[in-house]
Image (cartoon, rainbow, N blue to C red; front, side, top):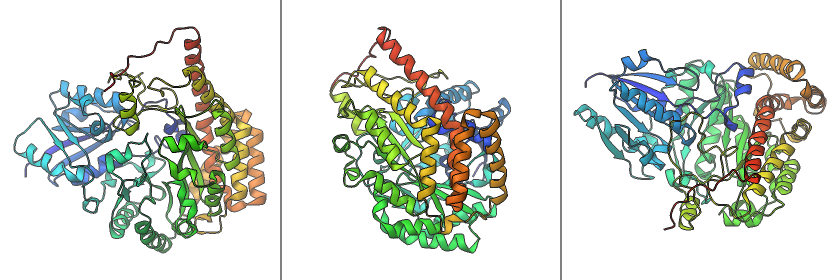
Length: 533
């Protein structure tokens, strides 16, 4: 098989994003939260005779030398990477380098990427082989589409972790499963990966961890599954083996993931996660209003007391990050008070609150288009254009409530939730509730000396660089040290996140205030709407 120089390029995310954690990355000495797991997985599927080079534009630059080396550029990503992805395509094509585009955004909106030479749509395990065969036969343009939800994830190889510079990232991702059993109207996961979660074998995922361990990585591993517990039977068969693997190696990794709120119903599962070394979980709560949850098909969150469910997860020594959304048709004018009150009652420090955004290829988008309420959108390579950012560019549809009221409610939530006193008070509440007597409660893990270094940087940042945080910061640390010393490490993590979240919340409220003013002055015009079907 002939050689081929493949340049994998991961596009930049929009800078104004909740998830970039820019200041926190600086604090811990990293450049970006996480590496491109999808691209390094694709790299492992390429022929052994092909040479591979990875450029992550969130941590480095794409040079002319890189392009001169390449016979092919492979790129792609998510909606917030769209504008940079298009600029990468154009830059490569100026040098007559064929460009292959894949990933979730291209799969959801292939029309946006028609300028690419190749589109490889859907899950790579189901279609990449056909693309490679066509390339070797001389094809330099084409479209390859995988059958939906059929890719065999047990055939997925160990990602090319060797292509990464571990020091550039806060965490490294692995993926155990794809798909989610729920039917949330606004979510595109079930459209991309289906409602029947497919899992890797235990041996397969442990081999990935073995590889990371062999390469010398220690620290934070994020299971990037959109719902780790979507297939409870499988994950319950996996977690004890993961715990055994961790124990045999003195717990080299600290784990985080994403799961649905019904995790709180299963004490045995929570215990398994704790023993395996999971310390945090992201949960989509969205709203405390049952009418909203029922209308958006997130009924699983209506069958429980949300705050008590969060507290049950804290009882397992796992802290919760959560998502909330403002802008649903069914929400009332009390939405700001309801969401803020729930966040305080549940004691969720990191509460990612955003404006509803109709993602491409979702039930929500199809309904809004049918109703003639969806804004006509377009692709752009303007680097200042923010696509899909729920904090500053949501509500891409004609709203039921007046738009300025929704924006004002959203602004109120952000101001209440991310004021220093409110945030640090929630951290103190979490510190009281976390039961750290399990395997995730050791402060003497593999990253102990790194933690000490982070602690020093955190003290410097919170005490001298941002003096308004000094009082609540020290009150939080001292209280935790005397009441639940084992919780000092997760508390440090939550405080470190505020280095980003505090300034970012002020940036968001300023942007939203501008939008409200434009509406009030009559300077905002409703964008064109997609014609109703």
